[in-house]
Amino acid sequence: MAIRIIVKEPDEVLHEVAKEVKKITPNIQKLLTDMADTMYDAEGVGLAAPQIGILKRVIVVDVGDEHGLIELVNPEIVSTEGEQFGPEGCLSIPGYRGDVRRAMMVTVKGLDRNGKEVTYTGSELLARAFQHEIDHLNGVLYTDVAERVYEITPEGEEKE
Image (cartoon, rainbow, N blue to C red):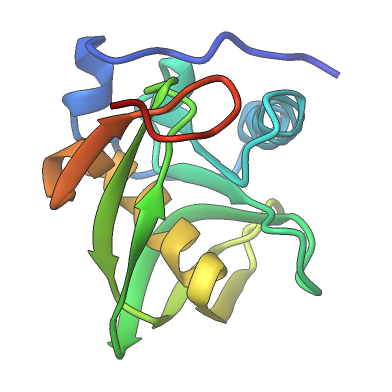
């Protein structure tokens, strides 16, 4: 179990486009494991490799539903449906939330840790998490697309 340091805004790596993974290697598999450990340790629901300073197209997501931990290499959104609007936070921007408009349902495809192509369809929180993490791979933070960003207290309340 290796917990990595989460990069915080305004680190420039968060604004760069991550590179495609050409081959699943033991290092990529270790990266996936470390990312999941880091996400769980930070009590997040998703993490993208750039958030730990690695410009590779790799994400992990676990929203606590029947899918459990989802590991995706080179993920891409293949379809979207509907719309949802609500608050998002980010492990790289502690102490803030933003109101973001996202698709209600998304289908994503990518590779699993063994290089097999996988597809997931998710709605609500899972759809939001997929979109948020894939945005990270493109150097986009939720604060770039939020209609409103606000500070929150340690108790999770909006700060005036």
